[in-house]
Structures are given as C-alpha cells and as structure tokens.
Length: 477
Figure 1 (spheres, one colour):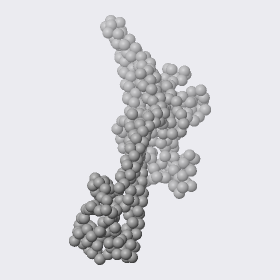
Figure 2: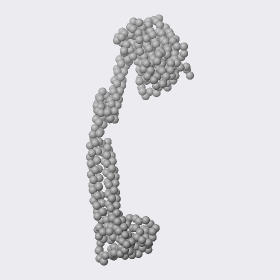
Figure 3: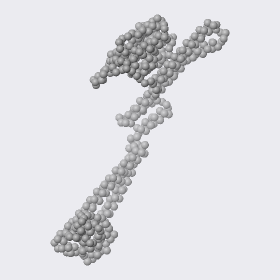
Figure 4: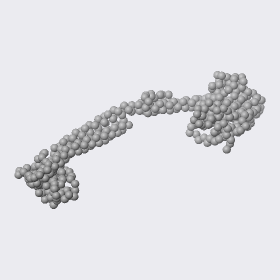
C-alpha cells in the first residue's frame, strides 16, 4: 500500500509538472513569436509607406551582394504578382517560396497570414500580406535564435520535470509511511490477536480521523468477541456442571438395576421411577440449552413477527401449565375488556410465559394459587420524547405473574435472570437455572423488559412489559 500511495503521488505530480511545463513552453513560444510577428508587421508597414510615397521599385531596393546564407537578424521582403512572378526583392538572388496561399493573398481572395518555413536551410517566420493591386508582399525574419532559446527552455523544463517526479517519489514514500503508520500499528495489533488468541488486547486509538474510528471499531468488535467467547465458555462450564449430577445419578441407578438380586420388586419400581424423573430433568435441561442457543444465534432463521393477541398467548400458556402442575391453581385476572395486541412471535412469547408460570408453580405451596394478569399499561417514560415530534404515544402491554412462594431475597434478586444461577436456599429445588434466562432473552428480543417485584417472605411478582402494537389497544385483524 505504501508503494501504491507513493506511485500515485508520483504520477499525480508528474502529470502536474508535465502539464505545467507544457503550458510554460507554449506561453513562452507564443510570446517570442509575437515579438517576431510584430517586427514583421512593422517592416511591412514601413515598406507600404515607401511604396505609397516613392513607388514599388524605390520601396524595395535589392543590394548587389548576395550572401551565401541568410543574415541572422535582418528582415527581408519580396513582392510577387498573383501569377507568381517576383517583381521586387530586398535580397538579390533570394527567391522565397511562392505557394497557393501567397497567390490568393495577391489576388485579394485571402487575408494576411503568418507561416513558418525553411529558406536555404534556415528557419524563418514569414508574413504574407497584400501590397497593392494583384500584388503580395512576403516578409521573412530568421528565427534561429528563437529556436535555440526554445530548445534551452525545453531542456530546462525536461530536467525540472524529471527532478520533480523523482522528488515526488521520495516525498510520496515518506508521506505514505507517515500516513500509514497507524494502519501498520492496526495490522500488528490484529496479527498479535490472531497469534495469541487474546481478545482482551486493546488497540491504541490516536487522533479523531478515519483511522481512529477504525481502531475504535476494531476494539468494539474485539470486546464483543471477547464477551461472546467468555459467555460461551461459561455456558459450557455451567452446562457441564449441571449435567454432571443427573448423569452421575443415572449411572448409579443403572448400575444398581444391573444387579438382579440386589433389589426387591418395590425398590426396583421406585428406582425406575427415579430414572424416569432424572431423564425428564435431563431432557428439560437439554431442551433449555437448545432454546437458549437458538435465541442467542444472530444468524438463526426465526419465525416472522406478527401482530398477536397477548391475552390469547397467556391463556394458552395457562392451559399448558395447569396440565403440568395440577397441584397448583392458576387464575387469570382480567384487567382489560379489549384484546391487548403486541408484535412478536407467538410461540416464543408463549414459551416465555410458560417458563414464568412453571417457575411460579415450582415455588408455590401445594394447593397454592398463581395469578396472571394482562393489561395495557401507561406509556413508557423512555418513549415520551417522540411525542414532541408528532408521533403517537407507545403504551406497554404488561403481564404480571404472582405466586405465593417464599419470595426472593435482596441478594439474589439481581441474579435471578442469569444463566444457571440458583440461590443457596434453592439447591434442593429441581430446575436447570435456564428458564428465567430464556424469559429475559425472549422479552428483550421483543423490545420489552422483565423484572422482579415483591419482598422476601411475601411471594414474588414477575412483571413483563412489551410495547403494544400501534398504540394503547389494537383489535385483531
């Protein structure tokens, strides 16, 4: 990249230098030719004055001596007719070329013009203009000194251009090195992360430019990857710990069953029942792990969100939970006369409500009551800022699940939605510790929140808030 930047800088400078040199050459040449042309016009004007005063022959008097070559500075002239015959010349024995353009000027069919040509091996500048009826005047001046000066100028411009290109290459390489130094540091840091697999490394951020933003973005990406990797390792460790107990118990029970004479019929039946319960626990844990992995996978193909009636979802969850926990009574407390509509995936929302109901049933005493209410609550204060911009107020659909259990202590309340978290007082209560984590993941994926209310010893209330579909209430389509 450094070589490409230096090459691009050199090409850009070379193009600029060549263009500038070309412009300088053209301007200087035009200025020098303008001076020569002015001298030719003045000489032609002087000859015209002589012709008008003394006549044609007296105006142009040819010297007797004919030099072998043209003088380097004097201006010479000759007069020709429209038929190409030379009638007068300032240089005896000198015949200037008479072309079609000269004849047209003599005949009055063309305007005066300048031309460059070679006469007796010498470069000259020529002016052709009218010189009376059916006559044309050719005035020339050698331009060898002008050509020499232009050659010197061209040599200087070529040398200057070459030096400019070389200097541009050197400066481009230096500037590219300085400009790409942060990129080199980013590359070294990325290579260090790739070789050490240490995602906790932080790339230094310098300045406020695009490279600083790139470094900050890479740091954010590394932080997210590190967090994801730590969460993955923690999940594997916690899952291994949770699986160890039921697998060990299953192995022990299977080994006992393998001993044919070690158990009587009643003990064998009890052991088989324990095995079935342990398989259920293991199956539930594996199902929770699969569900949690599905919710965490950003690339997973999920069901499309639709407008669903939240009270119908809660009703179906109540029916399922009542079948699984007949020892507890589930009661729906109606708080809204119209359906409460939300946007989401009905199956995921039902899974979250069922997990909350299972958790409440697990902590409720036998014969206890679990109350569930669904309502469209007050507007979320965090969304009131949109009202000033003319948007409608967004209300929250609220689902509250209350149990009659012992409640959650203040030291456990911040962690109840963490994966595999189980309080010390609940070590004998069956469960994987993933149910509430799945609830929080589903609710947050739907733009809502879940929290715990209630004091220790007075039961627990799980409050779920979800944004309503299109306002406070909505009717199903």
